[in-house]
Length: 158
Image (cartoon, rainbow, N blue to C red):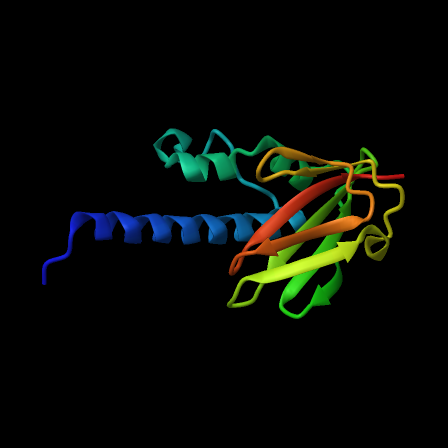
């Protein structure tokens, strides 16, 4: 059967998008649970050969810093909203890493107030995967996550 070339490119693009979401979700979970990230020069792990997408995920210094935080505490689930989970992990610099996981099979919207995470007077929020400062979200946070999507935030509060 004849299929135009643009169909192949579109399918490949959608597949890569879903691979990226799944990869971020898995790394988010590894980092949040304080698993050891094995990124040493002694392995046969050739970062230069990886596609840029995976290289950006595996070498995100802010995410690795959360994983290798000197406090060494694991993150813990704070609450669930359906198939959406939200957790918190205290960091040695006084900030808190907040992880959101969509474990559902459809896009999910999650919103919560900082008080639910026992955070008061939030001064700044940073999205670690996208490397974006979200500013002062004084009340709380709201996001719509794709299927199996994940977010990792660094929250500065009192």
